[in-house]
Each structure stands twice: as C-alpha cells, then as structure tokens.
Length: 528
Image (cartoon, rainbow, N blue to C red; front, side, top):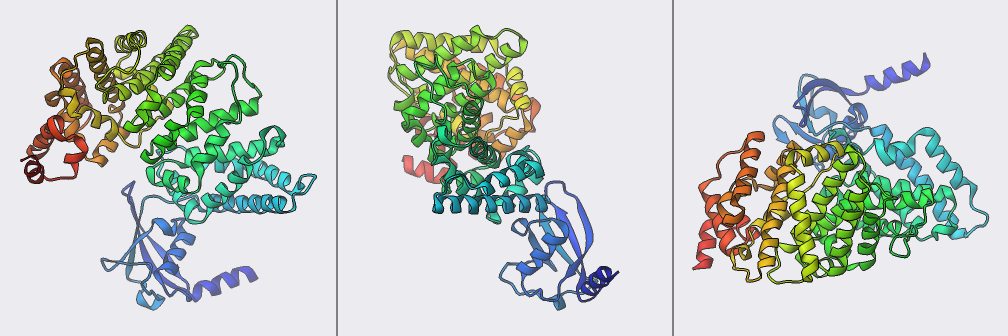
C-alpha cells in the first residue's frame, strides 16, 4: 500500500500531456499519455521520459510541438504544454531497452574485471571473470548480445537496438573486452575466454548491418581484432592438416562472417587485399571440406567485396590466387553429393566467377598465364549454363544474404574501356563472359525487394535500366533479358532524359561516378 501511495504521489506531481507516437517503418500512429516529471527542463529530459515510458531510445527520436521541430539544446518545461496539447515523436521502431541495458551492464562488469586482472597480472585467474561469464550464459545475456538483440537484420527493432547499444557505450565496452582477449595466446587461454572472444566476434558480425554501423566498429579497431580471431586456427601443408579443435574451428567461422561484413566498406578493401596471409587463409577455407559450402560462400564474398577496389587487383588477380579459387571449385564439386550440396556448390561457383569478373573487367591486358585464363573461361561458361537467376535469388533469400551497396558492380558496366578493341581474343572472350556473369549475379540479386531498395537508395535504378543501350552488342541481349525480368518484378520507370544522356556520357567518356554527382551541362562543358 505504501509503495502504491508513493507511486501515486509521484504521478500527481507530474504534468500529463498527449504524445502522438508515429512509427516510420510501420506507418502506425497512436496517441498515448506522457508523464512529464517536474524536473524536466530540456528536450533531452523530455526524450528521456519518452524512452523510459515507451521504450523509444532518445537517439532515434524526432520531436515536434505545434509543427515545429525540437532540438536537444532547446529548453522544455512541463509548463510549456497542457494536457490538451499534443507532442509528436517520430521514430523508426521501439527497442528492447531493458535487454540492451542488461547487456551493457554485463559487458562493463566483464571489462572492469579483465582490466583488474591485467593490472594485477594475477595468477591464478580471477574467478570473478569466470563467474560473470557463467552468469551471462545463465541469464541469457550472452544469447541476447551475440544474436537476439541484433539479428535478424530485416526487423526494424534490431537496427534501433544497435543504435541504442552504441549510444549507451555498449560497442565501446564490447570492443574493450575484445581487444583484451585477442592479445592473449590462444593456446594458453581458458576455454571460457575463448568462448567470450567468439561471443564478441559474433556480436560484431550481427551489429554490422549498415555502413554507418560498420564504420563505428572500424573506429574501435574492430577489423584488426576480427582478423586476429581469423588466425586463431592456422592451416599447414596447403590445407591438408588442420587444427580441428571445435573452438578453433568456430573462431575461423565467426571471424569470416565479421570480416565479410567489414570488407564491403571501401576504406577496408585495400588493407585486406594487401594482407597475403588473409588471402591464403581464405583460400585454405575455400578448399577444405572441413568447412561447409555455406561458409565458403561467405569467405569468397570477402574477395568479391575487396575486388571492388581497383587497387586490389594486383594482389588478387595473380596465378597463385586464381589457381587457388579454381582448385576450390573443383574440390567443392567433387564433394557435392545431394541436391542441397549441388545447390550450394552452384552458388559458390557463381560467387567465385563473379569475383573473377570484377577483377577482369577493368583490365585491358593479359595478366594470367594462358592455361589459367582458359580455366577461368571454362568456369564462367559452366556457371552460365548451370545456374539461373531464380536459383541464385532462392539461395540468397534462404541464407539472408544482403549487399549494402550495388553501385560498385553497376559502375563496372560503365567503364569506357569496355568499348575499346581488345587485340587478344582470349582476353576479349573473358571480358564478355565476365560481363554476363556479373549480369547473372545482379539479375538474381535484384529480384529481391531488399536489394531493389538498395538500388533506389543509391539513385542508380535508371542506370540499371539503361544497360542494354550502353553495353557492347555481344552482351546486350543478356542485359535486355536481365532488365526485362527486373521490370517484371519491380516498379521500374523509363529513365529520365537527363539520366539517359548521363548514361551515354558515362559509358563512352567519363565512367559512372563522374556523372552521378554532376549536371549534364557541366559534363558537356568539361568535354568541350
């Protein structure tokens, strides 16, 4: 009774107003009462009250009062609003506020215990750390942190959880724990510490949904830490002998997913490509049947991403690397026994061929020896004859694969060098096969609504529709088939006249990047 009275007294001292809740993702609107505490004096305080009562993090709230946007620095007192007036809050989604706070509290305890262990350099191991790890397992906090708070990506709540997690210092705390762990010798680490390192890596994988979030991870040193986890298990003798300890095997698996997400960032691509040890580690995984074909697709996707950087070409388009990729395709083909295996193997070969296509299209001279080049052409012909866009769409949808940007691939179709004569017959054949492979990959990818929204966000849908008009005659039919099917699945419109002109200028003279951010008038003036 006493508790109820205190609660009633607290409410009596609060100002009550109407709060118009507008969820951007769902389009749902609702009007609810909002209790404004008497000490509320700023918009920040106001947001805190909304967060506490309705689980909408302050960092994603946009507030309006009488149609006027409110800034965090604006003063706001309960006397500013009456019970008959409406405050409006726009937000993408609510969050699991209590789950995020519990995860951050646990991480802070782990971080502090590890720092104390480091300062004291105490032996034996501080038992408090092991107790905290067990507590994280028992309470479900580790499950929340590594999966449930951040995955699956397509749910709006998960994205808001990530923004809130970072805003409250969770990412910083997690990276501090991770940084401590990767400095330790793997062979001497207690099993619980190894498990904790995998939790951190898995959390980063699921956290990295957008370029914005990935850059936050990079700023905390996340890429270097994930790479260190990737090398917790080192193959020897060309992948014949492996450390098959389950924990070591899992380290490579979770690290590959994390590095794959980060490799789509342009600023990471060259750094990864220049690290020959990473390249060889990935090729070992691709060629080892100890790792699933599904994981091999994640691994080859790292190469597909870093190949987007023209500067990466000298490090990847080598006889050693390409031969390793071709060998991996042979190994995977030999071990595909049932329909599921064959389906995954076909998708794997497609991504290998797409990686080679991304590397080959910008080149204008022979780099590989003739035998390897012929094998590359054979692989691409096999993929074109055995895989359909529908099959690729089905695989990507089933596995939840998602590209954050498709501009790097569309950009390749607009290289002016595609219209230059290639004296080498083999190189010319390779170029046209590469374009068809890339069209196949995009054909399957863009059948999914999630990727159509990426194209629209990047503002390049007109340049996709224009592909049959700007590509060489040898591949224009494949481009027409792609665009026709694309139009049957998505609400496409004919390109604007301005973008049609830009597409032609990009294809023959300037490349796509130069025309996307420049007016036609300025482009023509520069050409004249």
